Length: 328
Ligand code: UDP
Image (spheres, rainbow, N blue to C red):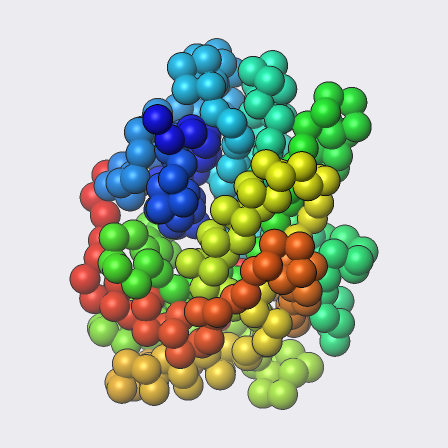
């Protein structure tokens, strides 16, 4: 029997790709998802347990049923714009739910805990390559809520022997090249899928948020990492814990920054179509530039972001965009 891993948010974008990677690596990914933003159709690689992280009794039931060896905690609200408008929702859904999950895991004696954090913990530190030694200074409720969970994990490590591995993701992009799972949000808010919607006429144009940033071409710079590389790092993190590795934070990115305009240009080249664009105001809460230094993950997890070229990420996203979708 493959060893069960509890995957919260396994019906979402990164979680569903993680389930595929876990199944391939010989584990049994047990998805725990409320389906508020996730998709039942995306659960393809192991059993499904519907539930809300706010429901401690349901969590206890699932831990007792599957006795997972580890938790991979992806479930979260993750939109900067929403977090600016409704911070209370973010603190409740991210921080309180994570506390419930951590306490349930400790009570079930499941101490290997892999957590999806974010480069949003860094806030706006322009010109700096961000790594695990960079001080966290979140500037929006999303980044603050994720940083609070990191702190909580540290406290449970100190007092209850929890062994967390924290991954701070930069901008996740691309899709499973086999087309089994992909990125699908309703409503969509992320740059690359919105751009592809505009390319094939599903929306009139992509609006570029801000053209007066202090960057090469006035648009924001982000570090994009292929979702398949990202989930490989999670399997690496699990193996790190299994082989006795210490609790640790790892930053995951490609190490290269792309401006919004550069991403648009690449999308035009990859799809061989025009990208309809309009120009708008800055989006509240956006940092100017977020670029990652992943040397620690490369060294400790022997991780390489091999698929994280802009061309490959857009090509995989485009293939999925043209063929894949989910229904609840
Ligand atoms: N962006 C944009 N127009 C959009 C969506 C995003 O110009 O319709 C920009 C956004 O300001 C940021 C980058 O694209 O600089 C990536 O944004 P996304 O929402 O994909 O991810 P985030 O950086 O918020 O995690």
